[in-house]
Length: 113
Length: 112
Image (cartoon, rainbow over all chains, first blue to last red):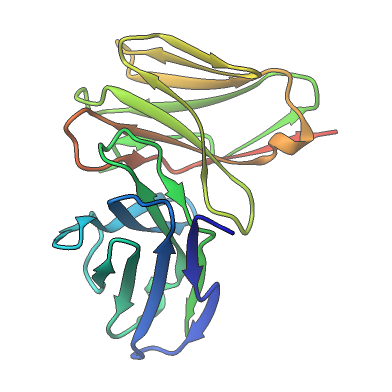
């Protein structure tokens, strides 16, 4: 079984809809991250969490919110989706320090019409 | 402000030849660098890393070189194989930093 799972894998939605992307991990890591990948822009950090009570904004957090329900679960919400949020979204985990290897989920391809 | 840049969006190399992927950074505080590889429909996976106390790190066919004065690093793949065809992301961080900064990625195609 995969160490980091994301659901759904693909989602098409309409402008203005609320969307939740979920991430679960079995690696026992404290740190979890949400990234988005856009062509020509690489991976950009949306939010990150060091534990259940510690959530931090990344470089592109506007329009997104997150919830760390447990050590193993970290969800990303788009309260009112807009077309420029169409992207590939990745969840990742790591042990402790920022230089530790990050383990990524398979990604969620989100299309906002 | 893109602190980690990969100026070549794509690269094509013949099988058996050397692939050289480049990465430049602007933040002089970065002291730890990583390369990740990403296949289609999968998440990125860690490939190799280097600390700023070194100028070279080797792992099998993969070698990363770091030139601190030029704020430049490169990934060499020798010999290149078709299975190496993927998108490669350079990433940078520092001890004490809370996060890692990724580059824009280079798509490598190894032609059989």
